[in-house]
Image (cartoon, rainbow, N blue to C red; front, side, top):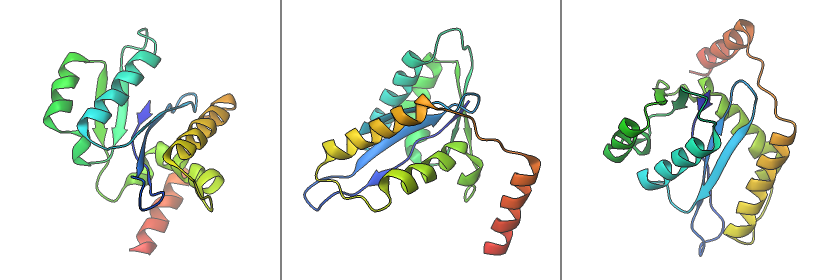
Length: 161
């Protein structure tokens, strides 16, 4: 399973950003997501514990694909991992977030739900995110990556630099 976290949407000057921690199951396309007001190791661990509760114990190994933000590999997280050995972290190289399939899902979320939207409050944004995740999961499907699609992305990356 590919796993990742990310998303900060600023609402108004009075409201703080809302952080969406999300994980994309590469076998089924199901998205697991939780919103938090902050993005620290504490919230990341709470998200991991949410995943641990949601994913059946019969799944003995959970591979999480993450970027290199310090929240993902701080001391508290490393301690947590020792108590939850079924979680295995894999970090994407710098500038290679496109390799993580949850990033594709974040792009879809941005285009379909967040693109030109204004939210009156954090709670309204939270509800919209949770509703989108529920709608996505009702018709969840894995992304179909092929060697051709990866080669195309690599070529685009090369021409962009």
